[in-house]
Length: 388
Image (cartoon, rainbow, N blue to C red; front, side, top):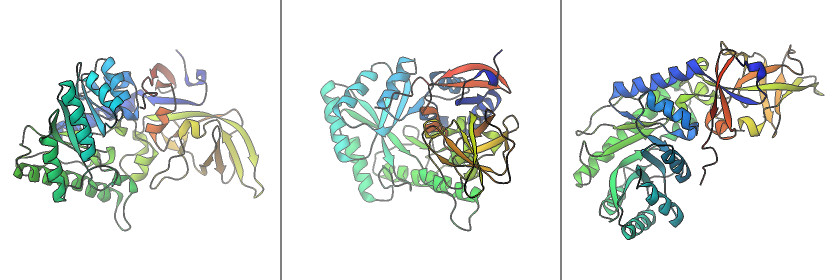
């Protein structure tokens, strides 16, 4: 049996027991709240891991690109939601081809996008399912659920041939900004989760008043791993949230820990890296360099994170390495500043929890499933190149 010592660095490690616990916990929350779990696979881009999610109770998958949809359709997944506007003749043609083999839906949030989709699918004699993307505070894409023009937009969607209005969808990404001053981390996440839920239920109610939505036949889909940890479903006007789409929950990462959504011990994904150099700076600070730079762990940071990942003293017990932080990244190097000296020497291996698991996975072809020090299996990240 191979061990961690047999793996070249830098490499990605997935602790099997923590992965299983994360899959089980989110399935339990979905069941308790009476919603379908449709995970967003952009976090891992792995067919094998998507199948693990299905086996753990997920129904359908969420993707970010048409390329990802094509990959998972070819792998046999037959219920795919593209949580992104599909714009451009080439993408619409590819979506139409996919509709022959899978139930497929995508987002709309502009009149030009609706018109283009309607004209295209009408010409092909196909009816495509669409969901209106709703902006509940991230201010990225989506219609304003409180604006009367959004109801008029929904009517345009519903009356357009070639497409069918299947529901509404949102992502409360503003939760990643962290808590406002004077608000606890837990209450900040809970507040965003409630706002996400309530804004969507109110909008569904307004659409019902306009004759555009009926409970039981209308999808109300929400996402974001932090908000899902605090999600509590409720009924308003006979509507309930029908679906959740978390992605990061399979692994968690240093951002989730910094937000207060999970504990460090919940993180299933770590990076194994080797100390390749050790020097003392002009100011007298000791600095180590490891072979995990921005091409390995990304330069993403988030609210409450300190540096570019959490170094671990003990990767088995997920204990933090004290007095050391990844202060900077170059493409192939992690710059580790140490206060008070270090026992680490050139050639030593250390593990870290990346700030952002989703981008980290995208940078590698393979991750390794482990059980303690044993390497159990490889995990191909086989959809990583499916960007367009």
